[in-house]
Image 1 (cartoon, rainbow, N blue to C red):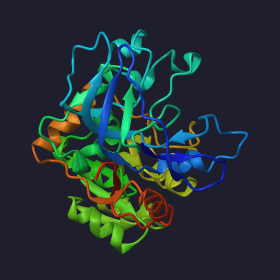
Image 2: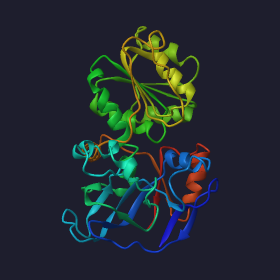
Image 3: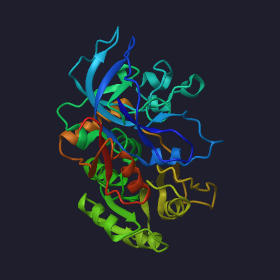
Length: 346
């Protein structure tokens, strides 16, 4: 079968032929219907050799959806022909966190070498994908896999971040979204769907701000040195009750800290390497700073429910598997509007 693999440190990913996977006990084989392209892929492919820990060659793709092709011995929850989405943050299934469906925070994953698909295990950017357990599959329930595969990360990650801050986002509050790309434009829609907050979006150019307005932002501002002042002016000097930074570089993290209200939340979702100093006088009084990772299996079900209700729609560009390297080129150049989706079996 064909697969998109990262094969050499510092090189672009390549479409190659690899052996078809064989299903074993407890496993599920999917014929992949859609696979999402993510900045996390670009991040790991940009790591130097001494920091790269994901194995080579690596089949990319941690956002996946497919049709069940075959099941291994002991699998009873899914059957051939079922349309499913892949819950990506795989864990041990035994620890306290996994017992709550929070495999994103598995306590044993690092020690046992358990890695998500596309981030250590073979991912979804292939004609077929092997899923280690049926508990890592969620029914699509009639949703179009191409339009919704990105929700397995670009929906789940902001949903988890926003849901944690919901007690602070009732009527009359303000939420700021920094970065309106793959995750941020979905985060805006989630805020509109489940909170009472006024949503202000920040990004670096008018095209990105236009997308933010299209998907529901009440206001959209340039992410520059004036952004803190502008947000405080729009909140009568109070600041934002919650700031969600989907970029995570030092300038955006600094903005997030500067515009957070007393008792506000700053959630750094982006993996740009920025850090926010925390201490008396360094940040607003009683501001909580969080760095979440992905979300729980139950939260993925809730995100898909929002999609079925029409509350969340992902802006996508589609590519065949042979065109997948081009999608990563466009991602690197900042030319993807929303999310890129690979269709391996088109």
